[in-house]
Image (cartoon, rainbow, N blue to C red):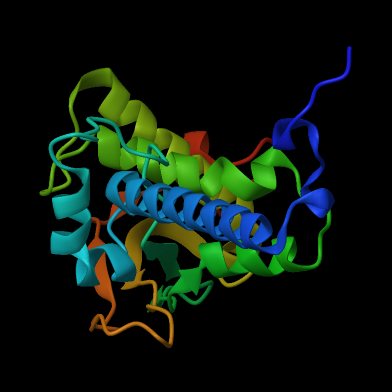
Length: 222
């Protein structure tokens, strides 16, 4: 069936005024969709430089017609770096007490991952998850709660001794260890206006005695 009229004509066959109107309309729709998607993304995304700078404008657009009660990226992406560090109190073979310097286990993990195209799950997450496990079972005063608190401490000690026992034992008898975290904020982008302190914050745990149960199989404290 042949259809008469302009409706069956391809865009190239439209008159110049019709093409101009079609192009302008398509551009306007594309721009409107892009603005809508950008506004909704800034509304549901975690706080960032753009959403903080244009917060009132975004809220005026979203509320009340497009209100959302959910957020993207749950949990929110990390906005800080947390390094787990450790040191030990040793007794040298001459009987003198020695306190080692702090060793940054997170930095060692980071260097190992840097040029590894296929790092294992253990390489990426063992230390981080152990520290998160400890935080979830202890309060701000580092007091643990029940069996899970004790288990998190034991797990963290074993990971540390697995990595550090050979280095420490070479210098003497390992008597105690101490763990701390160093938290630093992730720097904002160069084009951002947000001011963030680059001063590290520390959470220092009490000294833990080291026992044979904390050692890797076959290792000794001295």
